[in-house]
Structures are given as C-alpha cells and as structure tokens.
Amino acid sequence: MLHRVIYASEAVGATGVSTLSIAQILGASEVNNRRDEITGCVMFHRGHILQALEGGRADLDRLMRRLLVDPRHSGLRILCDMPIPARVLTEPMSLCADPAAMLGSVGLPCISSVTANDAEAMLDFRKAA
Ligand SMILES: Cc1cc2nc3c(=O)[nH]c(=O)nc-3n(C[C@H](O)[C@H](O)[C@H](O)COP(=O)(O)O)c2cc1C
Image (cartoon, rainbow, N blue to C red; front, side):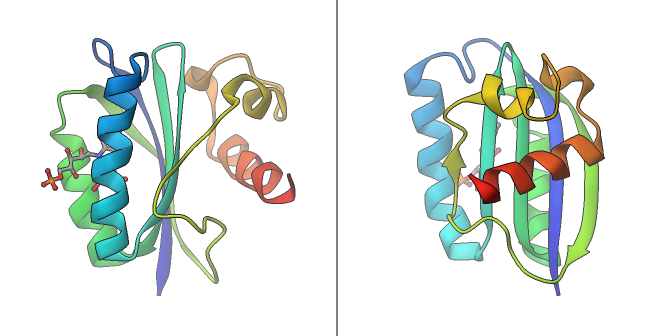
C-alpha cells in the first residue's frame, strides 16, 4: 500500500536559500529515494519548507525519522499522511521551480498557512501543469 506524507517546516540558516544547501538536499534525496522507491517534491519559500513524499509505509517512516532530526530545518509538522491508490509524484525528488505561483494557485502568500487541503490542491495543480 502506497502512502503520501506532506509536511511543512522552517528552514534553519541558509537551508533553501543557498544553491549549495539545495543541491546537497536534492543530491542525498535523489540517491536515497531512488533506493527506497520514494518519490517526492520540495518547495522552499521565504524560510519555509513544504515537502510531499510518496512511497511504502516503512520507507516513509524511516525517512520521516531522519527528517525529524535533521538540523537544517525545525518545527516539522505533518499536514497529511494517508494511503493513496497511485502516485502523483514521479521523480525521486524534484524542486518546485516557482513556489510563489504554486502558492498563488491556492490563493496563499506563504507556506506558513498551508492546510492539508491546500497542499493536496497544489499537487493537483502540479499534475495538471
Ligand atoms: C528539507 C529537507 C528535505 C529532505 N528530503 C529528503 C528526502 O526526500 N530523502 C532523503 O533521503 N533525505 C532527505 N533529506 C535529508 C535527510 O534529512 C537526511 O539528512 C538524509 O536522508 C540522510 O541520508 P544519509 O544517511 O544517506 O546521509 C532532506 C532534508 C531536508 C532538510
């Protein structure tokens, strides 16, 4: 059974701002997620992080345990965690290229106020794009 987890967190330091910090996260994610058959996407916007992940329960739980102790972000809160019939995300990890447009698609200025419904709507928007 596949599951989807979407969480929000706050970036620490240069996380999500410097190209290096983004490259390091994408690099490790690409390798690990391919190994674990996890697909995902991540968005960095004004010090906030939003990430959607899809995969098997045990693999997602292991990843969430690593994410919870990663000092590059804090205040991790799960917005949704549910079984899904099929994946929406197809790559091991992709970076949202235009966070403002994605947030704008659900009428929000910032990740801080994103709800589970908003996050799901953004995934639909992404799929349609
Ligand atoms: C915002 C953010 C997103 C991340 N996404 C992933 C991910 O999708 N997959 C992953 O394996 N690690 C991800 N990481 C890194 C993990 O927290 C952790 O450092 C990494 O999985 C450890 O992998 P390693 O044991 O191969 O070094 C992310 C880190 C941050 C800060």
